[in-house]
Length: 286
Image (cartoon, rainbow, N blue to C red; front, side):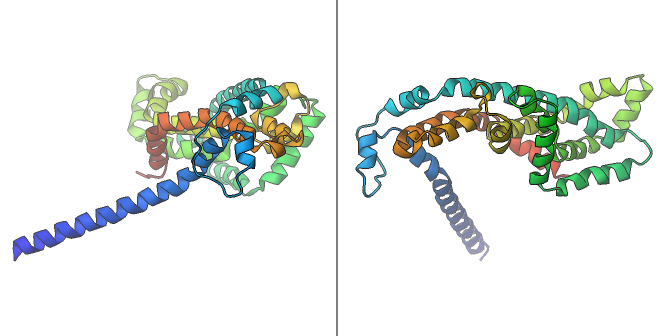
């Protein structure tokens, strides 16, 4: 009887595992299909794509001409470089702002700390549209339109990232901070040598999420930049559509999107474990 129960439990476990893997496989195919279709369209010739009354899920004559067209019709390489400058500068300045802020809320004691943090979190309830309007007026009054400073400044802080990092800092035992203060360690050294190494997965997660946010930024660059010298990749895609090239040549449009997507996909694949670890750590209290 005991062996029968063990076999039944083992069979039930195998069945559940099979159903789980089949479900995950189907879900993965649904998620990855748009990327497959994007890449497939980018290697189809314009003639082959235009002649398809019924879309085909493969091509026997792939071509890279669409990629050459994407870079020749607009200065996509320059927009790519502008996006790198914008992303690196914004992410770097943001870290300088949010790490000390999270440390202050997590470890320092000052009057009104709880109320200040609650008011700070309440900023997350303000609609983004209102923030964009305020930022636009401010940047315009300062004369920073069509400049990297105008692109970067409104994005150098984040209430959510400060909250996420503060929750991680708060999980570090108070005994470590007390011992460090007894040894004469300053708050800055304690932050750099103790708290930041312990919370490295979360910091890396924040960096990656911010890079993705900056790289995909569209509304703000469209508002404050009219000079092509400061266009980002998002502006480049829109420029392709506006000049009629994108409407006539969808394969070349998809080629540009593939080129723009590659850095983010590579970044996620390289640090996916850090992202999962950092997000899960941020949701644990203890």
